[in-house]
Image (cartoon, rainbow, N blue to C red; front, side, top):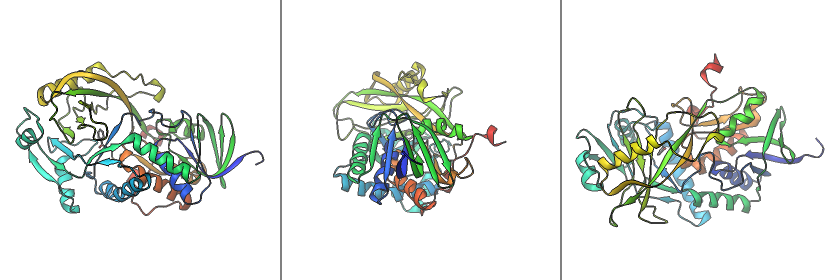
Length: 395
Ligand code: BEZ
């Protein structure tokens, strides 16, 4: 095709996974272009806030093995970028150990840690109160501290993968919107609001916006969007310190009753800490519908829980915002990763990554997207993550 700029791989979406893919593709000598409609370092489509949970533990052994495989890749990224990205303040899961949630289940996760020989400390409700300052926990609550977990530095990671992509010669174009994809047997034509490109493979890493490019090709993958509350609270004293914590509780009639919080931010400490509910309720249709203003009921639920159980924090919000959670419609999948073969015509030329709490896998996800683009396969077990269409469309 005359007039088209040609690349080996075009990545749509310059968030953490798109940039990680761009970096690793370019490092393998691939002529690579990363496009981001909103510009790089934006906080749309899920990449909001300073921190993300780093954990090894998963209830599902295959996902657990993926975090273990991701850890050395984070270490390599830290070493190349010369900065710490994982801060091991610990990962504390506690609550009703038999409650099944989309994040997992405590009792089964402890059994998997035993099987995989991953260290942890089992804790009773009283231990958790004494060690971490929680209060009035139901006596049957229990859990564990996994000391290698903690927090990931979101902005540090973005800076690292952006810098490495640039260093490897990846072309990075922000503010350019992809309007359409035309896959064929030999590659993909990519039309944007400024250019037309030709490439062998496209990697879609544009999160919540993935269906806007798949729908014209006759497919929508099954994702759900939630605008979730993020709340900043003030510590009452200077000696307060927490690991990352997540409380598993029986759902209420209204919501999932799940809450989490970060400890003090180790790379930018202040008296403020960030917490949130994980309420998968009231899905929105489109990322453009986010308002940045949390549901006041969700903020009140979190504040009441803190008032009852975390005396070290002032429960009156010092700040509140939202994050966009893009989650698979099928909770057994956690996120989607695979080729679009069978979903759209000539889908073997399109790699799809979308949705889920995938930040902890950033270096691995970039590698897998490159593997799939170059060879159609990967050494990592991603079989559970194959993209699916909504059930009504599949019938
Ligand atoms: C996670 O570890 O995947 C997670 C942590 C907090 C909220 C949601 C997900």
